[in-house]
Image (cartoon, rainbow, N blue to C red; front, side, top):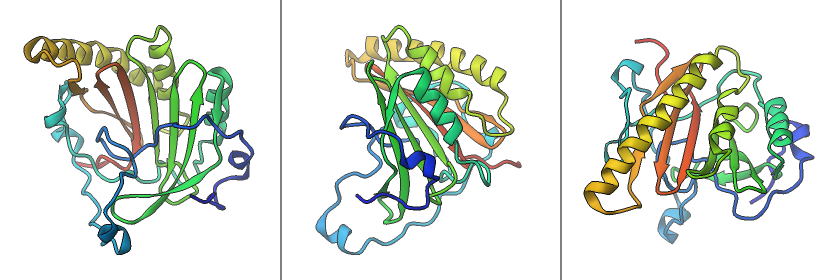
Length: 233
């Protein structure tokens, strides 16, 4: 994959992260952003229609099992002119993350998006997505469910400095979301005996972004998306 030339220069200078940093799919699914496609699909993908952003009032406020996870709209620019470069620089400094060079990834619908991936020595990872290759549209933060400082890392991600986000409410939501998601996960494991159960928190919206927490086995994935929920009912 080649470097995207339109991402702000400051992001082009960061050190390449460790191999295997996870990608952010800009969606609310647990899979990779760019799954392997058949030769037929790769030769001529047909762009799919943009997913319609649902109303916040229609989304669950409490966790559900993975098969009932809510459908969200396509992630889009959080705010015109918001690159997130200062936020990523601060996050990488505080958590000793090694950020990679911006790369383009092809989505299942054939469209390309730019991503910056990063990984910390303690296993935490971050992926920032740019739908238009310039302005941030998504942020994916992952950590181990049993990692002592994992909750603090996820909390740091909710402090994304895009205008309009209520950081106090985001912090409170994350604490409650973790508690409820863990409870449902443990209940599902007790019922099925399958430790690889997958559950999703209720949806939180603040300003231009939507936040949702995924719990899959021993991992938390916090997704912060722009444009995924209709701003007006």
